[in-house]
Image (cartoon, rainbow, N blue to C red; front, side):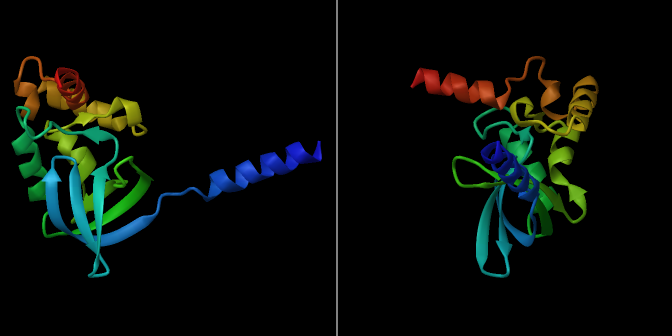
Length: 159
């Protein structure tokens, strides 16, 4: 019984210590509509994947427009990251606020990203997506836009 108690205590301590880290930096690059690079402490670069959203790939319709939108929101601005995880490519996954604007939510609000259902925690992003779809903003001008996760899957299967 004591082994189980220690195991449960360990699990509780580990899970309670997992909190979002807050990182401050300056955006020095935007790769696409959901990936950017920030400079921290004037020397360390961190590649960041915006959490809970998925933007069109560069080769997709609205891919370049999505990158442009994120650039307008964040490039050469101060950013605050609320880290969530690290992805399989080593990028920091985070909610990103640039000059006080939640860039993750804004990309969805303007219709240039989807709420990434596979990793979604903030259900309000679905409301923003539905509003963008209803008002035909951004990629929702297309009658049947292909979500990036499906586009990537199709691309893998054609190789």
